[in-house]
Length: 188
Image (tube, rainbow, N blue to C red; front, side):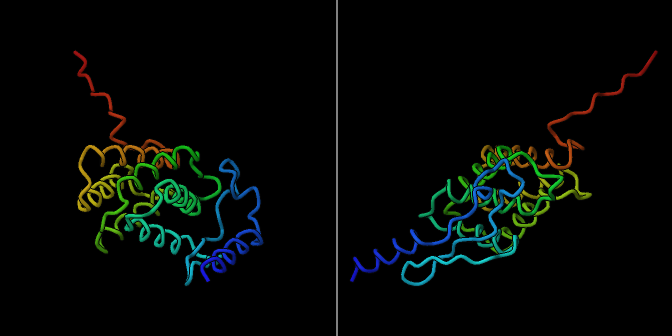
């Protein structure tokens, strides 16, 4: 019985339609996955289209599990984030992946409450869009959510630094704390 189930899953994987090459090429504007793999009963996997919001919620929920693959989740989160960006405002792929690597590394196995998950979700959606929110204000909201989850300050700062880099790639370095204004000098 067990061999038959394994064989069925293997055959499903072999004969399932393959995604196009553009879906795996991060440099391509169409590099965003349109389908998400979902586990179903008895180990079967089905593809189903989802909105970017649904895909983000699913990814954030998966992070709660201790036995998840960090690299897989990081790549998935990066793809989901790119779905939120406008075609003309897409940040460089390595910048997004650097942020998602650090974020997923810190969040795997944590148990954020609904308010913390919602705050993270809102920050992730907003970081990928041009809005009136300042970079520092948005980064501060993410930082507070991460502190609330229990991530220590040094690791939070690393995540927030990469979060600001994503935001600056989209919106520019408007008021980022990484750029300090020069003080005015009084002429005599």
